[in-house]
Amino acid sequence: MKVLSIAFNTFRENLRDKLLYNLLIFALLMIGSSLVLMRLTLGEFHRLILDIGLGSINFFGVLIAIFVGIGLVSKEIEKKTIYTIISKPVARFQFLLGKYVGLSLTLLINTAVMACGLLAVLSMQDVPIHAVLFKALIMIVVEFMVITAVALLFSTFSSATFSAIFTLALYVIGHLTPDLKAFGEKMGGVGKTILEGMYYILPNLDRFNLKGHVTHQLDVSTGDLLAIGAYGMAYTTFLLTLASIVFQRRDFR
Amino acid sequence: MNVDSEQIVTVDHLSKIFKVGFWGRRVTAVDELSLDVRRGEIYGFLGPNGAGKTTTIKMLMGLIYPSRGTARLFGRPVGDQAAKAKVGFLPESPYFYDYLTSREFLRFYGHLFGLLGATLDKRIDELLELVGMTHARDLQLRKFSKGMLQRVGIAQALINDPELVILDEPMSGLDPIGRKEVRDLIVRLKESGKTVMFSSHILHDAELLCDRVAMIMKGKLVACGQVSELIDHGTTQEVEMVVDRLSPEGIEELRPLAIKTLLHGERVMAIFGSQRQVDEALDVLRVHKAKLVSLIPHKASLEDLFIRKAQGVQQVVEVHA
Image 1 (cartoon, rainbow over the protein chains, first blue to last red):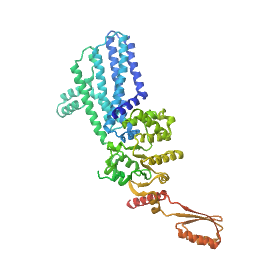
Image 2: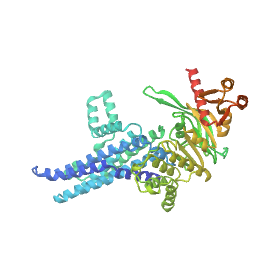
Image 3: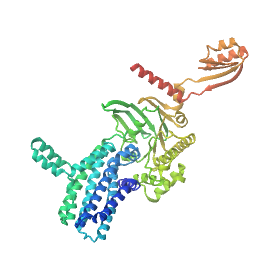
């Protein structure tokens, strides 16, 4: 109940934030722009629409996850709004969870709106829609959830600017973890141990990327999908637990 | 539980040391503070800015962890959910979710206490009425003045019908009318059986309202007790006398009796520190056939005590330095 109230309040806060609408409009314009770009390409325009569409949904969702996520807690501390919440019978982890669920809900609805835009463009151009497209969209949402948890973790102990830098860095590295492992193997010795350690500790965000499958119309089995989803959920739980531990020890000065 | 049921806030040798700056310099914000708030009273928590009032209150509300010592609310350790359910809290210069309207704002806080539906709506209407904000119930908080924010802030502190209300500087930043309204509200809360603890650096307010006060300076308790007790014990009562047509000889006789004498043409103003000196001065007036214009006892106030204590603290600090 308390978690849901905080989640709903966070969701409402997001809805009344102009940033969200600006990003959403941009995303829809990007998706729509594939219609124009299509005329400049020879053949394969189905792939182009799907590439630009899914890419836009992913890119703008990540922007929202990072830039709203880093403010979730740090803004509450900065603006001192947290004082009135923590002094009520609300445990600190409930507050954190509420904020997290609120933003996740925002991202889910945002993705749904952007996906509708993409589906509209696809049907306008008579592009066949396969089940793998929806699977890819679900995985995009799972990736948002992991990134939101990363942003939330950073926002429990550092300022908004640093949180943004850390989260962006982790997002980029998260998409390059297989390269880390490959690079480590070439290096050998201590370098290999460190890079392999990083490979296992950092989130492997590339696992959630099914855009290639969509454009090449390669289906993903339900088993694989569940495994990737479970990985995302486990990683999110790990991040949220860590955030709760950090947050529990904090003084609100 | 072996806790005096009358004491609903107990602070025992509470200390908070902050580490500040890059090198983690240690600063003691609250130093071995002990006090108790009893059921049904208005308790003033006084001290100059930066004395450690807000830090202490934050420790009571579980926002800051103490470095040493303990604090209990209703006999339970601070941070306990059951204890928090019986407390209402207004932070210093409150900032709220400014994208919410008054009603949405109060509904949100009501939900945090598990209040729902018609009961909650009724409570919200009552509270908006109580703080005189019914006209602004559908207005977003971003459009509010400071006084209006303070009012909805008080309303959110009362949403759970708390037994104990803790207000951090509830009168700061308000105009005289606003301050009077807050004072009246505090009295009404006491009348309805609630216990109120509030911090302030405006001593006049405390003097009018409080049953008991604690005064802290530089994190330490410097005085504690009933207002009347503190004023009587802690300060001497001065008397101001204004006289006309006193001869120069008379003035010379008056001078050694008074703490201070001022001459304005024919008029003499003198301040005396005791009743005996006043009596002797009156004898001088009679002998010299002067005209007594006024004789006014200066009522000792918390402010005198406060300034005296502040000077004391300053001296102690200087000696140690």
